[in-house]
Image (cartoon, rainbow, N blue to C red; front, side):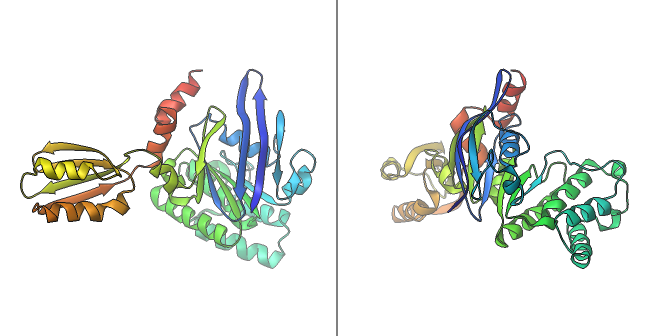
Length: 321
């Protein structure tokens, strides 16, 4: 069941179309990864869905409310973690989060309990009384993410959740986002970190130049790349042509590259399904295996497949426009 549905959602800034007729359905209770380089339209889409800015054309239904006709009702359902932290310059993390919890309607007792818990979860308890101007970029981002964790909204928009945060901190925040989803929130994750989206998302949509290029589960998108899976096989002796031809006859095998007489690189689809057959083929034909290594495409490969560019090249193309 969809909880968000966009209908030709479009935003134009003078001559720039930031979001171009976006048609998208997001399911209740999923983590939806909105992917693309900086400038692809992700943040603009999030700002329209959260009623921060108005569409130029089209609309969206959030929950059961039209973002144009009932923005106040939409705001009751959502929480937003901005790409750039929105903190009062003179405040401390404790002040910011305590105020946010009060706005969310938490009782005094529950407010104190939840603010303390979340500050500990994001490793900011010891820094709770520091002035915001004394915080690093990563610390400010932790406070911004903490707002969502305190509010626990029905729908959470999280823009670049781990920007400027160290590896250990990233994994902690990923776990907290999963827990938020498991407690019943729908999460829209806007990110240009494709590995992050792969780790978190139930489904992903890839945006480029304001358009939605493709949308599906990470596994389905990776499986859509013809010959994207790779098996590197080293044999104990030289392989003959008959075994190679039999290997090529497998429907899933796209190409076989002989690096050395006993070293093969096999490009194929659905590696997890066909690798037992390949192992049996070599053993049946008397070619013992010294080592076998499997790899599958990443969402970076998916982005290249659908755009012809790496995400870094896409960002450079956007900034040079």
